[in-house]
Image (cartoon, rainbow, N blue to C red; front, side, top):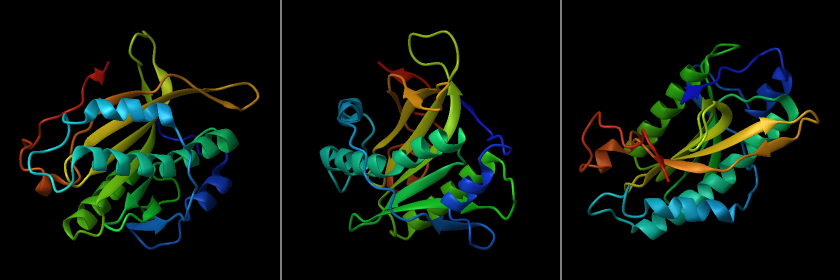
Length: 220
């Protein structure tokens, strides 16, 4: 997968307001509620990972983890569609779920006016790991723009990637191919999934080997 770096010449004022950049260096900013987008067809894809991504001895069973990650996905994904429709791009952002099930949408501010997407991703991951270690969150989502080759195709396409991680072991990456039509409407292709890297809640996934990737191949 190849990450995008947004073209800052398009839609920047609206984008900066949407991600609520108001904090000092290295903070994660609360984006507020973005609403829910029900995507039932994704549930069957996430179901492929029951038993595959969860670790032995997890505090919650895989069905519960799956349901909680679905709720997180539903809350996080609409903002990407909104930004693509309005501006044709977006900076990486995310969402977290606390132990009580409350979902908070977040964005990262590095202190730069035009940060690299990779820097924002690293900032969010670091915040997730820190909050995970102190049990402030039990699940997280990271949303970013990529170029990828969907299964059964030969050419790269734009896609929204959503990394979903649960503290009790489940880790999955949902890939949503898309294209922007001439009328600026977003047309999504067939969603596919990959095993996640389980790199956020490592201390709780003792069965995983450090440095071993789980998700280099799409799941059919």
